[in-house]
Image 1 (cartoon, rainbow, N blue to C red):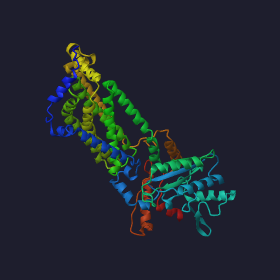
Image 2: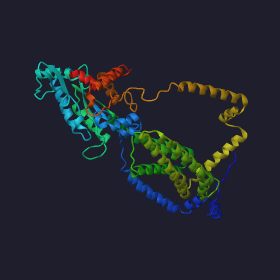
Image 3: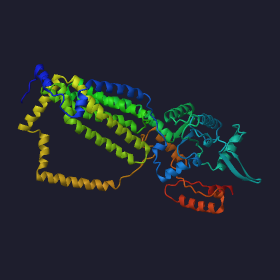
Image 4: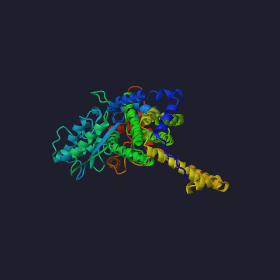
Length: 543
């Protein structure tokens, strides 16, 4: 195997003296002839954006998760004040492990829990419902005419007579299957949430809300009572709780990438520089988000991983080029400029292609996806400067270790000698596909696999195919709570609302009620419909 000995220091210095500092493109001269200024500017930007990153929030918004441009969703948002209790709502099911809900201790627990939930910021209090809510009423026909009142009367004292009266009121309330389970083993506290907290005008902090709910769960759960919670806010809160573990995975990713890169280069200083520049890109991205009015959500939180991985990939290419040039005896500054010339345009084209690919997600009319696209595109744009410009400049100062440079060059020469004498078995195998028989088999196999893929793709399902929240594990606490509520209540979180608009006061006209009643009968026959509720049905009950 041929070997290139390292050049003496005076030869390397001569190489630098012979280099024309005015050569290269305008961008190269601007950057490398002002290396110190560029480095200080990057340091200043890193400090400023690092400070800005401290104000980055991790949250989600209900409206960001839905396609607001869809006619159904637009109609819902337009009429959301008339649809209180639908949409962003928490359902807290209080289960009696022993006996039924008609127990003084159980009802007292529901009362205390309802009172505490009522005071949580962001709760739409006028529309909150539970057995203790005055708006939850019963209606009955007596010898004196129509009668009614709250399900739990004002004179309730927990006596057997009072409990029996509550049972009768529940049966006449029409809330069985809605607020009360059919087996009388549990009842629901329905908690509609506001778009913004009325007292402050700020958006709901779903992480804080989820933690508050968990505190109440821990306070009121016992060997007699179990608490089950479902709703968008709880899903997001659980996701944010789980995202704390992301930091552990991020640290593991940094350690693994650093170890792999060091194993390849055997140069600690250049490996740390590549990791540093990739981390600088992440810091810039996290600082730009709050500066531009963005925040991280449970979906875009994965973007920093992506930015770091892309930065490591491009950084390794720049470092490898500089390392090989230094191994040939080139001064580290000249090697950095040569590598910049060779790889800047190709690297920028690759990163711009990545940015455009992410930007295509903007066509999806869901804001959380659009925010993810913007965040990813910003991260890739930042890499153009941190890894294509800053990294070569820093390597022009530090260079690489002589041993690593010589090793890199020896590996390249070894590969050339191997190709000249005997190919590696793997490459020899791949060369077979350049011949007609092997190529024919490969093409035929590709066509067969393409046909199989096309056939299988016709069975592809879009949407949530499993019960519960697909973002969480099937055995997660939330999905177990969701399974309990679905099994015990006719009203799940999936509610289809048909709005019949009439002139003012005309909704109670006979012709309108007759039409609504006919529509309700049709809807009841649709597969998947568990129950329906309408003004026509209420009118029948009242009459």
